[in-house]
Image (cartoon, rainbow, N blue to C red):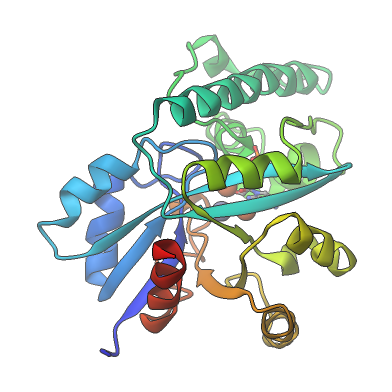
Length: 273
Ligand code: AMP
Ligand code: FE
Ligand code: FE
Ligand code: ZN
């Protein structure tokens, strides 16, 4: 149909992005995108305001989510598209997951004290509606002068192999897929190139993954080729997006990865099945 472009992986300040839902829409409009998906970690709170605001700009907003699941100790992100975000049970489930994130936030802050870092801002009450992640702590470390950039916070303290890392184990792959399906969403394996564990992709497909995120700001051309082949061989849908988090990753903004609207048409067909 038309030659318009879409970005199907965007975070807002309801999780660990820095742009408010309305700002996301404005930027998407400035970049000339015709549709976007909001895919916050463990929250759907940005979806309604984004949709409401989108009418002003004629941008289509796909309701999405990004869940963190665990395959043993490997953290695997599962995207869900076209989720029914008006379900009370879904909100309750996500609220429980966010509580795990808040406890973990405190644990990480505590671990940092072993390195002589006492963050001043941690006496603030954590907001139940925000899905807190390591980027929030990285930002505090930067704001209070303990690191010179966000990357350094991850490199020294927060990265998966770093001393202040704390797991947020909560869902298995099957649990995450079940939540998305139960909310009438399409489960998609997020950025497998970041995961670097291709051997397990077949298990995720067996568990019900319906698509793979092929295009992503951290995927190389050879990643794209490899995952396209896997998608083709397994009859999987193809998605892609920037994974924009706003100012905390300024090199990856909305529309950095974009794909033709036709990919969204395939997703819609699957959704209507
Ligand atoms: P969490 O969900 O709390 O474990 O945090 C994971 C999030 O941290 C990812 O979605 C990214 O937004 C961010 N992140 C992970 N590694 C890095 C890194 N090296 N530099 C900047 N942001 C990162
Ligand atoms: Fe994130
Ligand atoms: Fe992710
Ligand atoms: Zn993401």
